[in-house]
Image 1 (tube, rainbow over the protein chains, first blue to last red):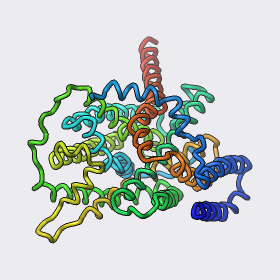
Image 2 (image 1 turned 180 degrees about the vertical axis):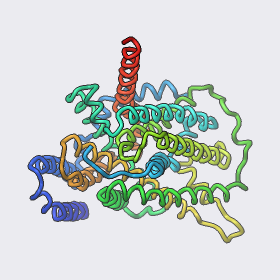
Image 3 (image 1 turned 60 degrees about the vertical axis):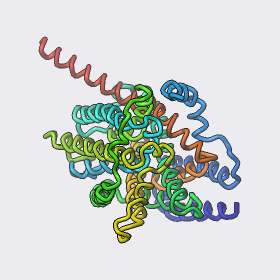
Image 4 (image 1 turned 90 degrees about the vertical axis):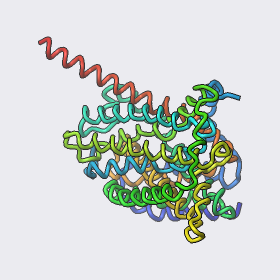
Length: 79
Length: 371
């Protein structure tokens, strides 16, 4: 867990120090989109640090497509 | 399209070849042989045919809407909100795709050469290099990938030459002991990865200096056929060296590279071969990240189209380390769900846009003839 916190802290420090000045000078909508992406990344970072197995993109896709995909593959598989 | 950056038609074809060959050359043989057996090459050829059809579609659209990007003409056909509804799942799919490429490189290196290193390290380095390359723009990508793909191709051809003494053509038979169903299973896999991914070039083709003289189309087709030939060679070599035992080997070509031993002098070349495959995956990751950033910045009409590269890269890195609990889950998603996902989210909308454009053009011609 400690290593993961260090990795995430380094990543955010590098990212924000690189983009901070450009963000200050950019349009408002850029700040909103950027903040939105950062909020999602914070959720994922917490998930990563805590190894919490929270719902993610894969679960959404599996909820919709896993069963039909499995049926297609099963139909084409010979035991 | 605001972006004034352009690349030559040849560079576009090299980027296309890099994208299609990328990680496919190492990842395609084993799952195809596992699903289709000796007929894996047949599965590849069918998927290649479908990929060729998709390439025709995107080249047709590029010619019809010269200088315009996919968002512009999908907005014409689906309306503004229809276009947004098409793009949101498309971007999510690309983020999943990029995370899968990172995972793929991570698992490959972790399972074969660097077992004690955590996979996150590979993901992190790969995405940092890809993001900085995207930041430099498509012109740099075009120049750089032309050189890198030549290195990848040189390594592959040397590898094939060195492996010739180990080939057993008799392993190619029997061809269809269980009928055609396994062949279609292989086609399903090869269609999802890499041939349905051809549609990403609907976003990149407007960057080519296309003068409507047919040169771009010609070069793209050459790249496509060359890619098909290389993957075919990779599969045939895997079958002819490993035979029936190839089913159980995860990275068939990597394993074959470990068998090369010329008079105890030329040996252990698998590291060089692996290096060329990592370069291939890096090129693919770069192109996908470029397309994600391009779509988002065009959707929101951003003046600075590079400000979102690093947050998107951070997001995909975090997805890559949180998406799956186990490698098997990753294999299941790529082998089962991914081909269906890309067909529904990417291929169908492109086919609809092509069909509508084609019908509109036909009706226009008929009206002109009538009047």
